[in-house]
Length: 235
Image 1: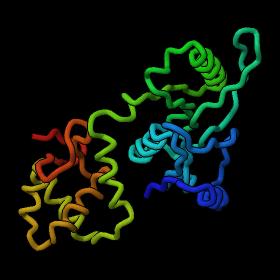
Image 2 (image 1 turned 90 degrees about the vertical axis):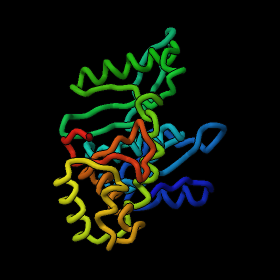
Image 3 (image 1 turned 90 degrees about the horizontal axis):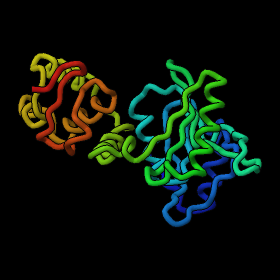
Image 4 (image 1 turned 180 degrees about the vertical axis):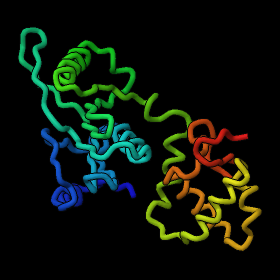
């Protein structure tokens, strides 16, 4: 599901894959210190999306889960601006395309947002986006890593590519709808004919497909997690 590039040769192989359709406008830097060069597999227009930090990687996971974005492009353009009388260039991290339009995104740690240098960059990006009818947004760890969200996403994405029995998944979903909401444990007790490991995988996949809702921020996913159909308030 998620591939962390740990060697130069492997990363070069990924760069050459046909599924990667859009190249960044800036050369991707090697892993160093807290920065970690990664490739996150998606099922959007690109098979793989680059990141140069773990926070960027987690942002791509968030976008992938929300399923609202039809296209994601890494380091899509370079913005020219003037700072201190000098011409400078700024490359935002991502461009997102969805039914709501285009959004240019910068992923930045909250402690760095208020720095003067970054404020100049963000002002330049906002002006460009305003001229094109796009949105500009800065995402920080508060947006990307609220509560247990990323830990729960890691659990969910483990079942993403599993081939699970569709009939059983439909029956589980219909039964949950009839109950309104309940814990995973309580629902599992009604399906003793399904092995527990397979049942949990089915539940996780239905959550991943957003056919079942769960609180992914305030609680770690467990047998005690309350689940329900989307639009229903958990009891």
